[in-house]
Image (cartoon, rainbow, N blue to C red; front, side, top):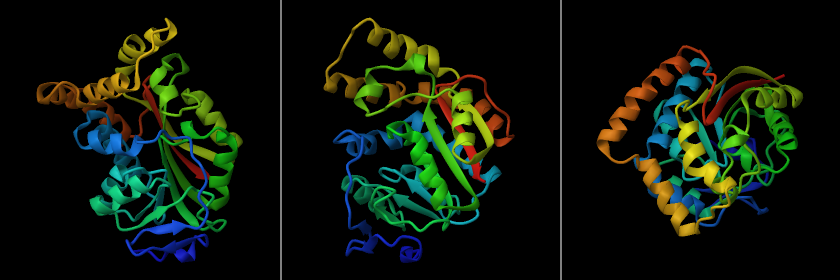
Length: 278
């Protein structure tokens, strides 16, 4: 384990091995969200392939020290990073998420929001925001805060949902404030003190499916109950079984090769960015 007192003055180590902040601020994330994600992550083609993309980006643009996975939920991403040989610290305010992360074997876990942890300026080598930024109302100020905590030339890795045209009830219920376009995300990074080293869309075949299944019904006034949304999300993430998953894996392998080679995709339902703090 990393002695986190060297970089975070607002946390103390609990008996369960989790570092806990003394201050506990509210977050824009639905109750039960971590438990739902824990249920589907291991069998989800989307979570599996997002991890593959992230590891490819980390291997091409390696962090210069421990990567702090901010808002990392149940540790599904952090575990993949840890198993790939990188030092990682999960930072997650939800008690369910941090408990699940410890059960998964994440060595370094902080139960806290970014600000409550008391990170010292310029002390973090790398930060990951994996589908977190869309939950932050003032994303510009949040990125500036991240930059304050990052070391000079420290790296930021992030993924976000893409394309405002795909906004749906699922976004609203998940506590999202927005979806991003690649160009707008790059401008946001530059304006908040970063150099965008790599930025691409991911899941380029998903926008038509999301538009038809989610966005258009939402625009037409179709509203579903929470249990219906949960059931549909579970079905979509499991992608219909092993045969469908095998087909998807083949399709997505071409995208993965592009990320590994540093090429960009011009369309997708998510964006992936790697940036340096200036």
